[in-house]
Length: 416
Image 1: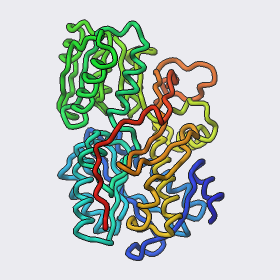
Image 2 (image 1 turned 90 degrees about the vertical axis):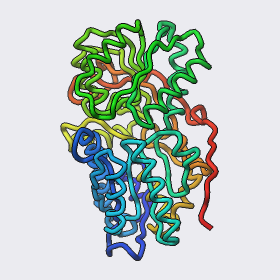
Image 3 (image 1 turned 180 degrees about the vertical axis):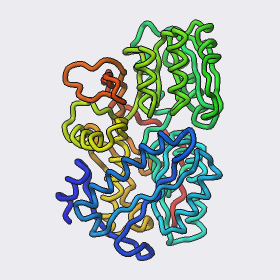
Image 4 (image 1 turned 135 degrees about the vertical axis):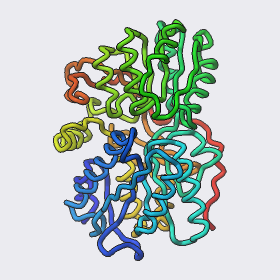
């Protein structure tokens, strides 16, 4: 299968082929370690669905260098301890590519585990592809040669959000609410630091943390927001912790602007519609279905037609897998020892917009454009709604990749 044929399988991605000798004949196994049960399951299942969709399309075109791609799900329950058990199980199953995204505390544990595993087993090679764990520590002081980050980290996203918020004159008082773990604290810290530096007239009137995926009634937190006099909320909450927060806000009649990282995740957009928060909820990410780019929209439509109840879509997964397969092609091997050097400094055209992007070799951070969008009634040339609400995401700002770049403190240790 040549690259031109393979690109049709993903819409944008050039695919290649090869297999490492230790793998089962004819199969390249990719282990997906994310929550597949419990409160995080709705989010984790979407990622698994999209990886299966990608694999099916690639396999229908002959696979990668004649090898079939097999996605294997491993349930980590958003627990670092459970995740490490599952990663070891995946390795025992012959998996050499680990994919994870939900929970930076989980991601940090996997990053350190994979690094130590490869130190103990030189030549074996296990790589961790991270599509959503965005604590900046992962590409700074804890960076690893065996880790690649395909989502912008929380500092990069916050810088873009704050730059946009500076242009909104009605933002005067900001309330911060985040989940009580490493990622949530990185969001809150970045918001305080960057708001103070870029718009000192804005007041931070609250900064609270909620136990990760433990709260079922957010009305006390909404009462705090109302009492603070905030006109704007910044939150990194995801999954039920965002959907239930928005639901409680709607029930209490709280009308503020919401600046989020993950309002599009399962349940979030339904909560926004039910709360009737039209054009009040913003999100920053790597792309939305309603961005006018035909190649992405064609693949998004095919996926949504197949998964009727799942309208959330992660363009970064398509970038990640396309780059992975291209690296395998260029290395003529599916062994990470051989293909990781091909990923470093790889240049790529993004799935979401066709814009130029690249992996920064110094810390393995994917540098890509970011989009700020708002959720509300659809307008002309906006064909995609979310969760069958009749509302969808509308782009209000696009940040070029070069404008998202922040310095890194990574001192990467490379294999000899």
